[in-house]
Amino acid sequence: MSKPKKDTRSRRKELYRVRNWSEYDRALVNRGSLAIWISEEALAQWKADGPKQRGAQFEYSDFAIQTALTVKEVFHLTNRQSEGFIRSMFVALKIGLSSPDHTTLSKRGKTLKVNLPKRKTGNLHVVIDSSGLKVYGEGEWKVRQHGYSKRRTWRKLHLSVDSDNGEIQAELLSAAGMHDSEAVAPMLEEIERPIGSCSADGAYDRQNVYAPLRSHSPDCQVNIPPRKDAHIWQHGNCHAPPHPRDENLRYVRKHGRQAWKRDSNYHRRSLSETAVFRLKTIFGDRLSARLLTTQSTQARIRCRALNIMTHLGMPDSYKLAE
Image 1 (spheres, rainbow, N blue to C red):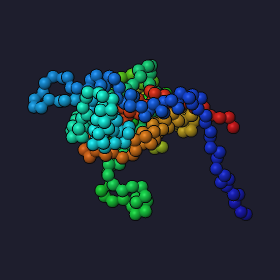
Image 2: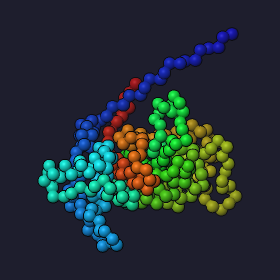
Image 3: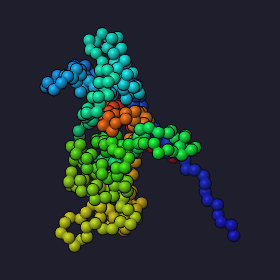
Image 4: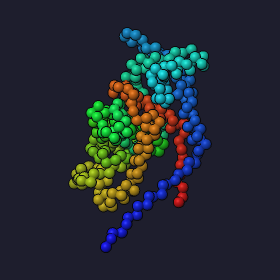
C-alpha cells in the first residue's frame, strides 16, 4: 500500500501594511541629513576643553571624535575619507573648524567612551541575542565553494534590545569563543531602567544568566526555554521563593513546550534577530578595525547610530486579514 503524499505546498507568506508610511518615509529620508549626524551641539563642543594632561593636549573633544566616527559608519567611509568629507563640509558651509585627521580618529577610537542614546520610560521588555561580525577572511561564496581557511576570524556582538521600540539598551563585543551567557551580567550593568521581562533562546539557560537578572530586577519575568534534559535547580523543600527557571520547567512538563512559548510570549524574542538584521543591513557584517579595542568602539558607534535612526521614526505595521 503506497504511503499518502505529503502536502509540499508552501505556506502563504503573511502580508503586512505600514500605517504611518508618510512619517516613516520622512524618517528614512532624514537618515541621510548631515544635520542629524553633525548637530549644532556637536559643533559647539568640537574643541577639547578638559583638564590638562601629561604630554600633548587633545585638540578635539570626545564628542567631536564620536561625531566623526559616526559619520564614517553611517556613510560607509574610511578614516581618511571621513577626514576629507568633514573638512570639505566645513569649507562649503564656512564653518571655522578643522576636521580630525585619520591618525587621530584611529588612536582616539581605542579609548573613546560612547554612550547609547536612550529614551527612558517605564519598565523594559528586553530581548537578548548575539551574532558574528567578520574581521577578515573569505566571503560567503568562497566558503561555500572551497571551505574556509584557518585565518578566518570574527567577533561576537551581544545585544540587549527593547522589544517595544527596537532600541538597543546595551551591547558587548567579544572574542568568538565567549559564551552568550557570559555577556549578560556586563550588559545588565549598562541598563538603568527596571526590566519587566527578558527573553532569550536556550543558550542562555544558565545560572550566570538568572542570577544577575534576579539581582538587577527581582520581579523580572524570564522567558528562556529550559533544555530538554533540564533538571530542577531549587527543589520545593527549601525555604527560598520558587526559582523562575524551575517554574518555566514545571510549566513545560505540564502543558508542553509550545504552550509555554505561547503563554509566556516567548516569540517576542525574534525581535532581537530583527535588530541584528537591521544592524547588518545598514552597516554591513564586517569590522574594518584590527584591534579588539577599536572594534568595540566601531560596533558601539553603529549601535548608537541605529538608536538615533530608531528615534527618527519606526514603521507601525499590522497584519493583513487573509
